[in-house]
Length: 202
Image 1 (spheres, rainbow, N blue to C red):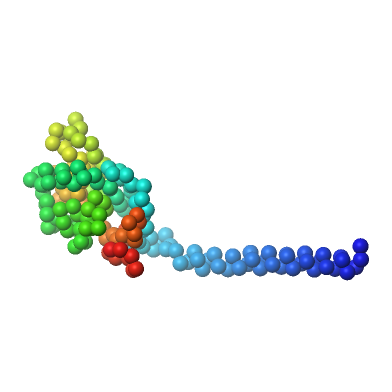
Image 2: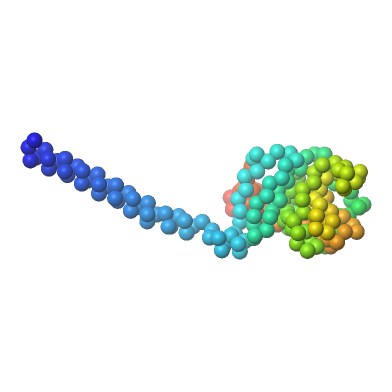
């Protein structure tokens, strides 16, 4: 083999090696920048918004995400669930949510945004002593009675909430479950922790 052929092979090898090293270096340089743009654990704990995909949330199902170290419940209520809200109003302590916490846009009978009244978004922390109630969507279970049409039950001290998070009268919890700020990015994605999304739907 001639010296020219060896030199060309060596040159080609060195160029490829240098290119690969440059690419690795570029990735190593860009990664920390991209990572720094994502919210840190401290920022998330302080309340950085949380994006949630609700596209696979079937009617009657609930999913749980974390925001500000609190469980956030997202429930896709059925049309029957919504109709049943009227049936329990006379059993509630604060049916119109006058003393409870929710954004102005969720201060309605469904405690949700007008865009999708079926979607319930709320903090899963009992307003009595901070336990986390359980989701009880079934009708008239033996332990909750014949008039139960679905809602949330706190096993710690027996507080009950309907499927809008409104507290029943005569239980230890003093207020309805809070509704956090949230907004729609699109029809299948919400952002918990903000009232509006720039360039997106409210």
